[in-house]
Image (cartoon, rainbow, N blue to C red; front, side, top):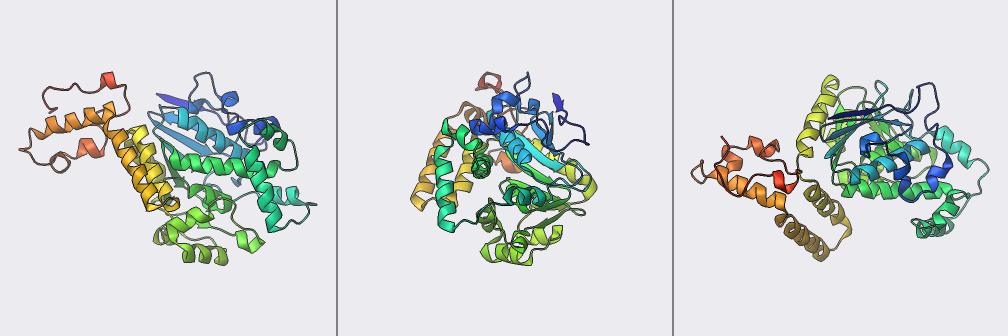
Length: 368
C-alpha cells in the first residue's frame, strides 16, 4: 500500500507555517494531534517533511526550500515522526532525503538562531548546566507546559531533540539518510543518530562549521566520536569546511557512496530488505549496539543475554527456525545460509512481521 501526504504548505510559505507554540507544549511532541485519520506515521501532517509510504518503507522528504535549513519547526517534525514510527508496526524502515534538488539538511538556520539570541545575557557554564537540568526535570509532566511558554523554551526544544535522538537509536525501524546535498551542522548532528548514511557522489558534502562561529555541537558531537574517533571529529570542526563524499566515506561517516542518479533507488532497496527484519528484534539489537559505549561490560552482557532470550522465545523466530530446518533437509545437512542464502538475506523466507497465525506451520515440506 502506498500512502502519500502533501507537505502541508505551498513552497512559497515559510517552513513551519501552521504550527503554533501550543504544539511545543505537549510532552513527546503532541503526536496524537497531528495524526491523520488512518492513524499511521505516513498520515502525520507536518510542515517541513513530506511523507510517502510504500510497503514497509516510509520515505520522508525534507521540504524546506530553497536551502533546507534546519529550523525549530523541522526539529518538531522529526520528533513527531520518530514517535509515530515507534508505534506504527507497518513501518520497518525510514528513508530521509532532501526534496529540493541538491539539498539535504544544509545546517541550522543561523539567521533564526541569531535573532533568538539577540539581547540574551551571557551565562556561565555552571548556570547553563543548572538551567538544562531544571528543564530536563520538568519534561514529561505538567510543568513542561509552563516551560514551553517561558524564556526557557529554547532549552526545552534542545531537551526534546535529545529525546528524539535516543528514540532513533532504539527505534524498531531502521533509519537511513539518503544524502543528496549539503549535510552540515544540525543536519549532520542529527543524521549521525540514523542507523546508516548513504551519500550521492555529487552535490552531497558533510561539515561541522560550528567552531567557526564560536558554537559547540548541541546534539551529535559525542555520537560523531563513535563513528570517526575524537581526533578526526575535532579536526572536522577545527577545519570548519565541508568534506566530499569520498572523504566522508574514508572517515567512516557514511556507509556507502553511490551515483547520484541511483541514490534513492539504492537506499530504498536497502530499506526494503531491512524492513523485513522483525521490528522487535531490530529494536533490541539497536539497543545492544548503541548503548554499549555507555554501559559497563557486565551491563552490556546482561542486556545482550536478555535480548537473546527474548528473541529466541518469540513466535516469529521459532517459525523462522522451523522453516530453516525444513529447508535444510534438501541440502544434505549443509547450512541453508550457504546453499540457499537469498530468501534469508532478502527477508522473503517468511514474513517476520506478520501475525503469528500467518507464519509457516510447524511441519510440512520445504518450499521449492
